[in-house]
Amino acid sequence: MKNRWIIAGTVALALALAAVSFGVSVFAKEGEEKKDGESAVSWEKIPEAAQKTINAQLGTNKPEQVTQEVEDGFTAYEAAQKVNGQLKEVKVGDNGQLLEVEDAISLADLPPAVKGAIDKKAPKANIKEVVRVASYYYEVAIGEGEHSKELKILGNGQGVEEED
Image 1: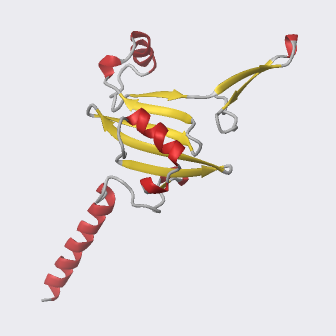
Image 2: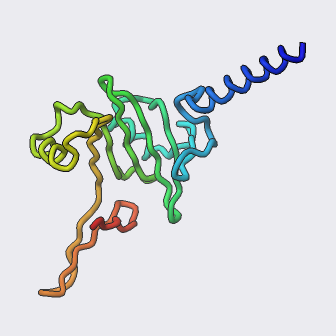
Image 3: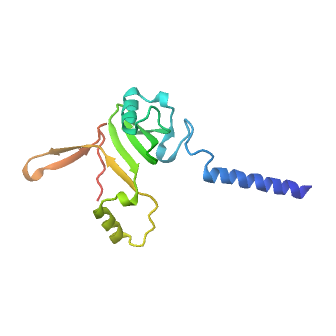
């Protein structure tokens, strides 16, 4: 009898671990914290301006997944929807400003120069996923003559981090 309880407990633990590992649901529930400080949010709680931009980009009235992220006092929303069988994600500010669009594409759809760069940098790599990312920001040239500088600023006023 004791062995049955041990086996039953072991099976229950294994099922619980599998559910956590593989995820019972693909999408987080509202209020549930995700990676990078994002939390799931219901569609009804998103400002109308942000909803309009998301709908225009995803071609839907209500995306499959929406998360909210607050960083430096600015609120942004990320929405995901399958479009033509591929996952597409958009990031918008609460004012409706389009910040970023990500869409999965096939390896065959990459430009030849990108394929060449992959072959050069990782010739034997197993490519798992290809995502095209478009980031929207403003470039502003300031200064005079040799003392000129270019600023990159998102629509919410945040500076874009420069990568080396």
